[in-house]
Length: 548
Image 1 (cartoon, one colour):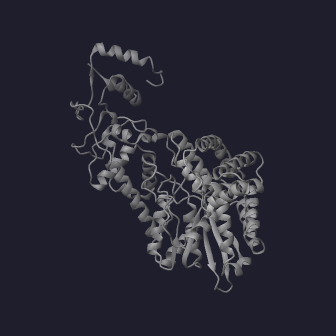
Image 2 (cartoon, rainbow, N blue to C red):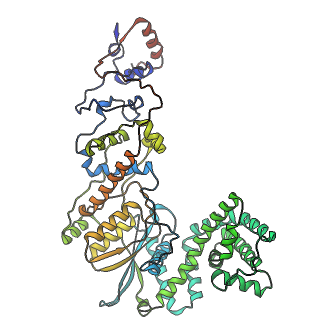
Image 3 (tube, rainbow, N blue to C red):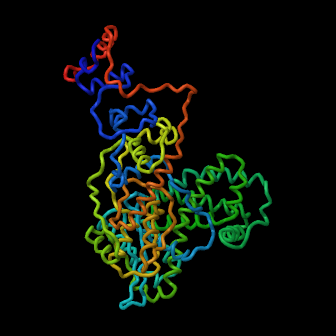
C-alpha cells in the first residue's frame, strides 16, 4: 500500500490528484474552529476557487462579523442576490404631497447640475432659504458622488446667473434660456434621449396612423379644451383637419426635430422637442390611442416611447415651474441673491466635531483595509452561527435561487465612497446654519442605504428635518459609512437584516429520494492499490517537475 501524501508531497498537487480520483478526504492543515456534527454539507460545497480547504475551516471566529469592515461584504452579497431589496413607491401615484412643487423644482435643479448619467455625476441639492436672517440667504448647496471639479463649479455658476435672469424675462424667454444652458452642458444626455426617441417613434407613428385610418372609434367628441388635448384640438381647428390628424402632425414634427437634434443639438431644437413631448405626453388622445392597440409588441414600443416622452417633457415642465416659483414672494424680491454653493466630502475631524456638538458617538473607519475575499458560504454560515438560526441549503441551492452568485469571485466591491446625499447632509450638520425643513433634490433617486441613513438622521437630530425624495430601494456596492455611529448602526443593522432575510428565503431541496452520505471526517489518508498507481502515473504527465 502507498499513502497519497507520500506519493505526492506537494499539497496543491495532492489536492488536484484527490479531486481527479474523486477523493473526498485529503490531509489538510489543521484548523482551530470546530463545527457541529449536525451541520449538513453538500458535496459541491467541498471546494471553491477561493479556498480548497476542508469544510471545518468554513467559519469565521465568533463575533468577527461585528467588525464594520464586513459590512461591505454583506452589501455585496445582497446586491448580488436582488436588484431591489424592497418594493419602491408607485411613481404614478397622484396623491398630493407636502412641498410637492418645491420637491420637483429642487429635483430639476439637481438634474441640470448633473451633466451626465454616470454614477459619479449624481448630484444632490438642498435649499438654504434664510430670508429673515441678516444678511438674507437665498442659495442652493449641492454635492456629487465625487470631488467637485473646476468644470462642475463653473457649470453651477452659469446656472445661477440663468436663474437670476428670470427677473427680467418672460416665461417663454426664461424657458429658452434654460434650453440654451442645457444644449451647452448636457449634450450627451439630450442626444441620447433624441436617439432613444427616434428608435421607437417612427414605428409607433406607422402603427398610430394605421389605427387612425381604421376609424375604429368615433373621436369627434373626445377632445377636451384643456392640457395637451386642447392644444392639439386648437391646432386641428386652425388648419381645418381632424383632431387625430393634428396629433399625428405633432408626432411627425417631433420625429423631424429629434433627427435634427442628433446631429446638431441647439437650444431651438431641444426646446421644440421638449415642448412637443410635453404636449403629446399630457394628451389623453395619445394615451387612449395607445391603449387601443391590439398587438403586444405594438404596446411595448408605445410604452417605451412614452417613457422617453415623459423624460423630455420633464425639462420643459421643470423650466416653467422654476420660473413661476422664483416669480413669487419671498423668492422674487431676493432673486438677486440666488447662487449655488458646492460642497465636497467632510473630513474625519469635521465628523468628530459634528459628533461632539450633538452628543453623537464617533467612530473612525479605516476604509483602506478590507477583509480578504471569502467564499459567500463562509459569510452565510458565520452569520447564521452568530444569529442563532440554521442553514441547511448548500451552494447549489443558493446559486439556483440567486444566479448572480456564480460570479461571486469576480465581483469587485470597489473603494467605498460617500454618496452625494450623505455628503450634503454632513456639510449641513457641520455648518449648523440651516435649520427647520430642508428640501432635498437628487438627480437620481436615493438608494436604499441613503434613505435609511437620512431617515435615521431625522430621528436623532432635533433642529433640522430633511425632506428627501423617494428611494428606488436599490443597494449599491462601495457605500461608505459616515463615522457617526448613532446613525451608521441603523444602516448596518438593516443590511444584516436583509442579509438574513435573503439567506433564509433559500430552502434545501434534494433532487433525489436517495441521499448519498459523505465520507466520515476521521479518515486521515487513503491507501492506493498497485493498479490505482497506474492512474497516478497518467495524472503526473499533466504536472511539471517544479509542481511535483
